[in-house]
Image 1 (tube, one colour):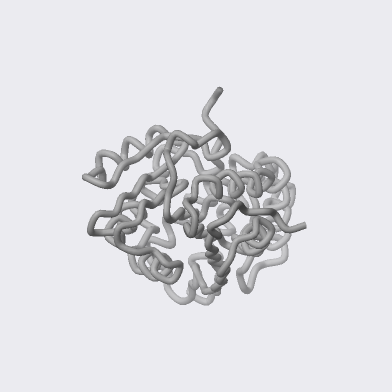
Image 2 (cartoon, helix red, strand yellow; image 1 turned 90 degrees about the horizontal axis):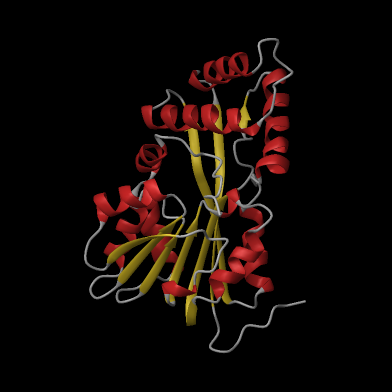
Length: 275
């Protein structure tokens, strides 16, 4: 089998993930979810390994973190950058069997399900089987992803909306993944479910270099891989790219994206999905 086709796959993806991953939100969200020292933790879709590194700090002493990602190059980067006693990495497809990884007290899944629109319920069900009794499953994703900008020119607004529709249908991307997370946990019978929402992107005024790089890479990689022809623009993608970057660089621009975090506890009995 070939490696899964990740929408943001490109040579600099590990760098993009490194730049946009900050310790503060990881610590805050993981502590809110209930991570504790001594736990065995899985970071599913670990990317560059930076989040796994932060989670590893939170489970010391005696805790263990296993970062899991489908990209061999990013797993290699993670091992070389962050590998340490109690912090290991494994190259696995989340849509395949993961039983050989063992079981966990806490499973972290952040910014992953948005790339698996059709298979998200199946993936969450599979991960649930890896949880120990009373284990915690943490799901976090963006909602209305890439769609909240003001004031957008009409042509750019129409192009972005059509682009996201194409990515949903053709690239299995889900710009509304966040709002579905609570339902996954509820349907699987999780207990002590908690939900939190906050701004992940909140961009106004002068554009900092991290946001400039992150969004230009998202635009360059995802938009081109989508297959959308950008009929709104006589010159196609390049004209769209130019207009978006000009808009995004304007300090009057206002952009936001909410992140929705859900956590639930697997009861000490066999889960029975709710009808």
